[in-house]
Length: 423
Image (cartoon, rainbow, N blue to C red):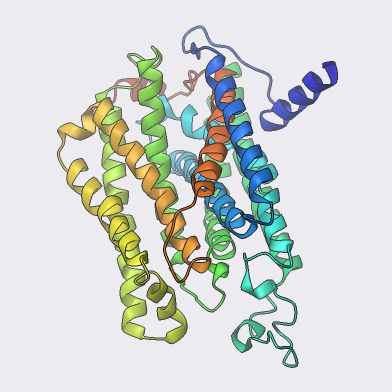
């Protein structure tokens, strides 16, 4: 029992190695049961999904379902990291009062690296359905599996280089996010205003590095599922969904914390208004990038490009495409358009939940037609993997949030943020 507790403690230290810094002014007052239940429920659901899914009966479905759920959590962490980086770089004052939320979510990459193990196993499985380019002999002209198009990309599409790139992405994200997190917590302890300058310096080189690694991670994790297809705008498309989801996650978390009695008098309708405006703006931006990708591929008429959309416009997937258009753009566009909706926590939280569901649905729409070309379908593993991994992500996030002040209380711009008003 003692060894088990020590192992759990070491795991928690790996997720957040900093010593807790409690705050009397802005404490996390929710019961520890909140994150304990989330962690245990997520762990149990994920373990059941893995053990049942990796049986011969569900193996192919499991690999795809797990990849989709894991990528959803990855997109949340990346989106929150971009919020923090951009905040420091442009010196945004309004978001200081709620900055700790995206900060705490952005340091989830060590956990996501551990949770990527089934994704890597799916890549290495000789019989797995993940990546067509991993089939033995696919670049050998003498093989029955020879594919001329994939053979031309073998310098990039090979397992050692893929794993090296994945390791580089995670090492970059872990270093940048942990550096920002440590400096932010250090400022809470020391009150040194010069730490804000150091945070801006890290963001100055961290933002372009994260932009490049996020784009290539989107190529590697999702686009290479169909190695014949290519889109230079796909990285921006993934970023748009991730950034939108991060604002939704932040708005939902703030509303939940206030409902639990925290952040009262700290986050106001003015902050909700700005979160709502950014959610609205990136709903439009996501739709613009999605349409641009579709329009350019349709106009070019290159078979290797158009086939990707062809599979998503037939055999039942056309219904999913229509739901994505309506649910990810038209409905939230209409709901978020009025000013009043953006200034109240309850309606903003509801649309935030909806858009988070649509983010998962979008990733499902991108990946699952590779497995089910002939007939669109959902599987119970899609939901169990998504719910289990999301619960683990949220549980670890809440635990991390509980260890420190939930407001960056010694940031020199906090007072301006607390008095923030929209013009």
